[in-house]
Image 1 (spheres, rainbow, N blue to C red):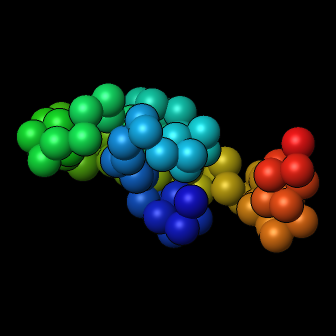
Image 2: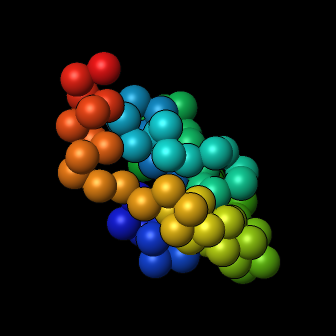
Length: 78
């Protein structure tokens, strides 16, 4: 989420909770495997134009619904 708030599209594993923030191909990339090769393939597939578009969309997503401690606690309790 920190990367997204700075306009950087994250490339993350599908095995972590932050994946819920990322729309694959829209606001970043979610890779299934937790291997260096999976992350390297995702990086290689991202053109500068794609990275810019996803970064802009990621920033807008966080701006529209910024994370707060209260939201985090509510989500944990639910």
